[in-house]
Amino acid sequence: MGEITRVGVDLAKRVIQVHAVDATGRVVVAKQLQRAGFTAWCAQLPPGCLVAMEACSGSHHWGRRLQAMGLQVKLIAPHFVSPYRLSGKTGKNDAADAAAICEAGLAPQHALRSRQERRAAKHDGAAESSRLAMTAFDPFGDIRRD
Image 1 (cartoon, rainbow, N blue to C red):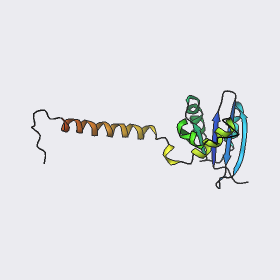
Image 2: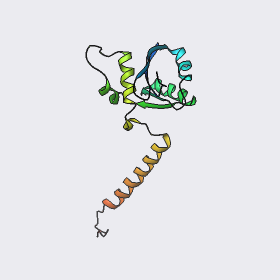
Image 3: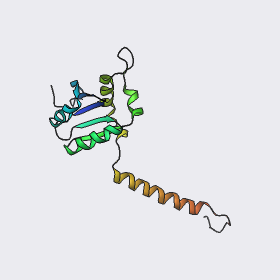
Image 4: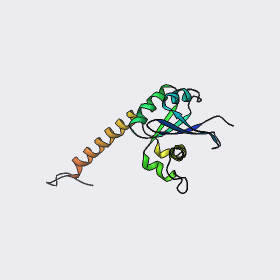
């Protein structure tokens, strides 16, 4: 078995389902953990390992804790995870959700931007829209357009 490089985590009220794969995509671990044992299990992961979770209020708490441990955390909106769920006989369960989250963690478009990147984008967008608003509206026709 190889070293764990990516982990999909399905958070629930009492237990946490993990689905971990190595660099080749082979499943290394797929099991349920009690909430109390999840942090201890994550402490054994290699530094920089990607841990993907569906975005929810609990995932933000766990994400901060895992980042403090040196792990890379990716929160993914649920509607980006649903295409990766295997439908059919297995149905929707914690193990299938954790596997889907692990697969969805590979997609680059799901990466959440940092707070500084969001603020910069918001500031740049606001400045651009106000500049356009000032030049686009000209009730008297005073602005020369070349």
